[in-house]
Amino acid sequence: MGLKPLSIFVAFLIIGGAFWWPVKAGDNVIILVSDNAADYAAARAVSSATGAEIITSLWGRFDDSVVQKVLSLAPGEVIIIGGPVAVPEDYAENLNAKGIKVTRIAGEDRAETSETVLNWIIDGGYRVKGDLYLLDGWDEGSILYVLQSDENAIIFALPHHDLVNAIHEKSGLTNKMASATGYGRSVYVYPTLVDASNGSLPCSNCSVMEADELKALSLSVSRLKALSRGIGDDATRALVIGKVESAESLASKGELEKARKILIEGFGIAYSAMATKKPGPADTSSGSSG
Image (cartoon, rainbow, N blue to C red):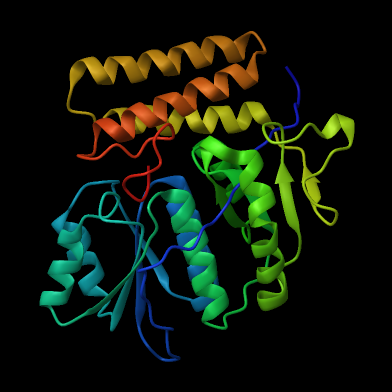
């Protein structure tokens, strides 16, 4: 099937009502984040900026063993990336009870969380190295592909439902980050947002990345299969597995874009089934890490 330009585009929105404090030199700070790809990518950016270690938890699940792992590192502060749908409030309550300061950086969904994190980096005066990749925040395989391809990748997660408008609205924020942190390039990964073949780019100074779409799809398949095991309802789990099988069949026929869209639908169903709210890509108004 060969390579096909793969589009991924990632955006970040800042929301009102989010509070944080800059990390001071010498503080022992730990980052706690769920295993959803967009929030994890945001945590990687914070880790790059601050040097803090990352600990992950299963999306939407409280696990006391994760609390114990955090406590074993004797942190002075824990930065939680993502909202209480992704990283339950039980974590903050348990850590607060031990006298540990908890700072949550989150938005209404994973795209807003991404933006809030990048603004936190800028406003805190931190500098990060690497290129800024703009991606569909719900295309988890593409995010994982970029993270594996570039250890210094900074991910800017765009809202799945409005990619085209988002990239134009957020172009000023990418410029703001470039001037504040000195990152390398803004990189647009194809094919969803714009068609590279016609020479159309969403900004005059951006670069283009042609990704291995089959590899990205494979990463989405593996992630969605793993996620489906956390779905309690048998019928919903079967529906998600059906999406995976359909995507694999389409990919084998070379219909890669259709396969990608079906996998994103599967992620939306899976995350919605695992949360009391509905944070999937078709409804980004709830939860932080849909």
